Image 1: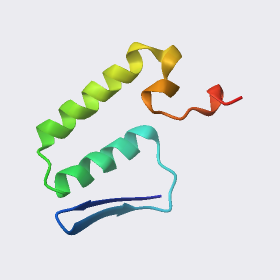
Image 2 (image 1 turned 90 degrees about the vertical axis):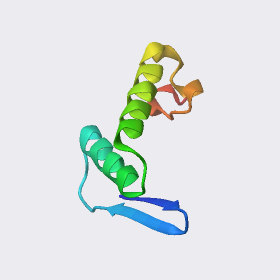
Image 3 (image 1 turned 180 degrees about the horizontal axis):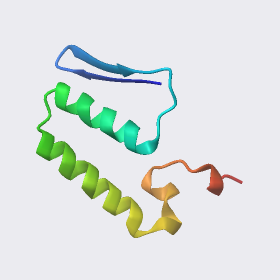
Length: 73
């Protein structure tokens, strides 16, 4: 897996060949955002808000921008 952020002509990259759990993925994404210059509190707030938004209506996950193979026909 490789995640890269390009911000102000700089590249910040996380790469691993290991499988990650969802919490490990979020930890690494958080660190990558902080390395790119985002304030830790802003990242924490944004991730919390997105998680809350996505959990409000579990029946409508696909319309919120998340691909879920369970809903694929």
